[in-house]
Length: 137
Image (cartoon, rainbow, N blue to C red; front, top):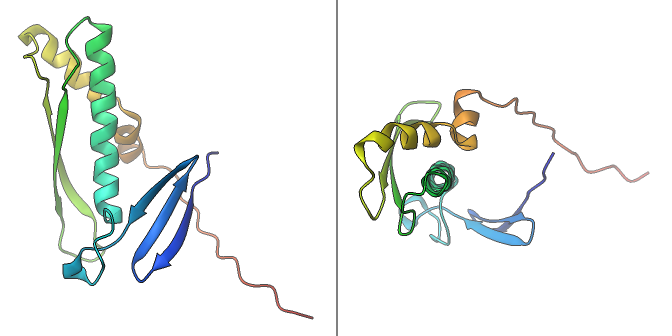
């Protein structure tokens, strides 16, 4: 398994350490945070959009189609109920140069096979363990 470490910084701000990279997550000012990074939900949606972009680019290159300048936009909505969850995500792929009509379905299928999307549709088992401080003898 791969490991990430999330460390509290201040109030609602956390640093996410992954290999030699640091991501910052926080809440927006409107939710009481300092807006020092994406919210965890935005990071979740961004992960899907980035995975889609990666899969799309690889597909375009593999089929000798232009991949430079590819953009992916992700629109998402929350359900507004309890428990809170993302209820809808729409991805918009925009290659810089139009993809021929006969290649569109293959590009869509490539994006639909990205690992993050697969992990949403085939949800991983998630275990939660709480470590308590050991008591001094």
